[in-house]
Image (cartoon, rainbow, N blue to C red; front, side, top):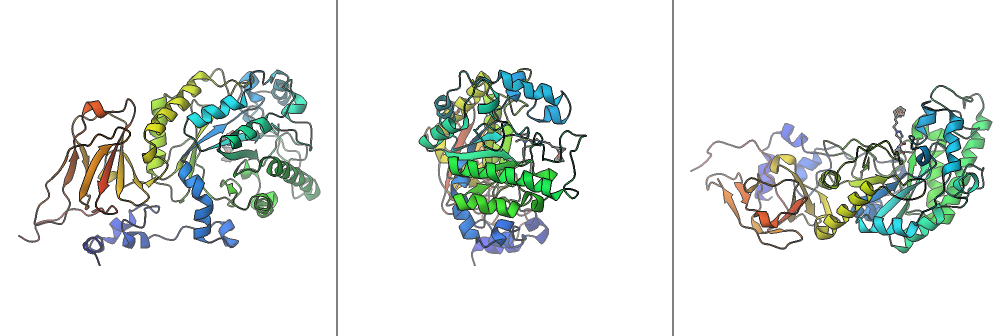
Length: 470
Ligand code: H79
């Protein structure tokens, strides 16, 4: 047993329990062993091993950034997607009249994909149908679609997906399970219901068939790598036929990844808007997040975050081992607001410079060790430190038991001077690692420092100690 194992073994149990569940095994196996094993999702109950799931999730795990697109008739008047009629901010008829203003006149799917590619994203998820039931493609189940209802007069999904695949990005399709416009769907507005499933199961079955038909249309035409469901909360897994939905998706692509919003049947969790404060317990997660406060285009919403703010949240996700699914809301004519373009371009600049500290990383060390965000490489022997600020002195890392072999600025290559302070010969407790960072090495946004260790990272997690020997 190594010296480190002995050290961990002497740490009180209560402290070990504080270690987050997603904490990599390599650090401290004993601490990890204290955690309950992550719950198996129903998909795994159906026979997939942990190793098989890891393999299937591999591209997603390394993708880190995805671009979400909310595009629909709600962009015409700039009202909230579907919710505006559901919550009765305006009458349903007025909401649907927006269709007459949806032109896609300047829609350039090639330019969209080129911007997404430039941002450094590895996948994109587009709203094929939101809760309003209006499909972007030419569905055969009804006339509620962009090709049938709007002056755009054509399927706007196919040319986009074609470009996505050409660019080597992964295809994600957002699909609302609920459809407040469908006459056979029980819920209409917040206060109006059409019927109840238990009173008329045959009518519900009719609706379920609509979902299955549309899912078949999407799977056969677009071969999604990822299905992003939404709106599952209104019905149970049984009513959605969640099991059969997953079977259907897998019959088209056995490696398909499904988000969690299908009543417990998905592969990864999807916090929405609220940036996680503690590391999510799910091994796989993705924060979906808007640049202003709206998913779709809303001309009155000018509350845009700066590129720096979005980048900082991206790094926050990286440091906790998750992805960022960053939303854009194109206008009805297909143009993308300049503020959103600026954010995607800056993400691209920064990611390109720091790619070694993005795609091949996993969650970093606990915040007590470093006042900022951190990640580790796959092997665990390079610690990346992200500085969304200009430091007033040396950068400090606490409790690092490894010897440091080299420190440099990522994307710049400059070697940095470092020193360890307060490492006493009579104590096993590590000293303070202090790294000098000259102003000239600072990135205009977030500087990244790489710390090469002599072996996979080992952390001291104790409370300190009095003199034990001298
Ligand atoms: O498409 C975007 C939003 O329109 C959609 N998801 C993103 C990606 C969205 N769905 N729900 N919400 C946003 C927030 C709604 C939450 C609530 Fe509820 C619905 C509160 C009350 C009803 C959640 C579900 C809490 C209770 C039921």
